[in-house]
Image: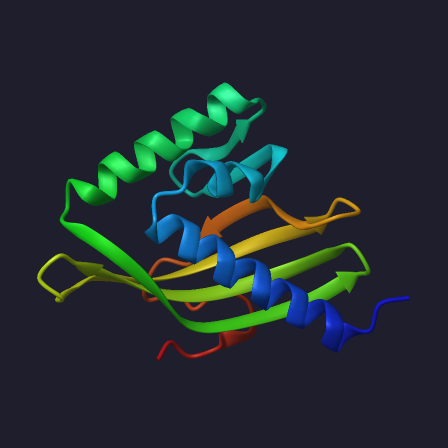
Length: 143
C-alpha cells in the first residue's frame, strides 16, 4: 500500500515533467500525460470529453495556438498541492505563471486536476480552472 507522502511525491514529479514537456512543446509527453478519455470542465462549456488520440491532439494544438498567439514563451510552477484519494487516484491544485517572450507575466492561473495511476504512471483524467477571484476548494489563498 502506497503511503500518502509517496503518492504526493510521485504526483509532484509527474507534474514537473508535464510542465517541462509543455514548455518544450513535446507533444508526445503531453499526450502520455493524459488518460483517454479525459475531460475539461468549465462553467462556460460544461464537460468537454476528449475520447481519442485525434481529439487529444486537437486539444493540444488549440491550446498551443491560443497561448502562443498571446505571446507565451514558458510556464513555471508556483505552488502544488496534492490530495491522495486512493492509491491510484488524487486531486492536484497547481498555481502556474505563464510568461511572455519578453519575460513579462502573461497570466497567473490555478488549475485543478483529477489524476489516476494506470498501474505505471499518473495521468490527467479531468482538468478545470479556478477563475479569479475564486480560489477553489480549501480557500487556499493565491500567491
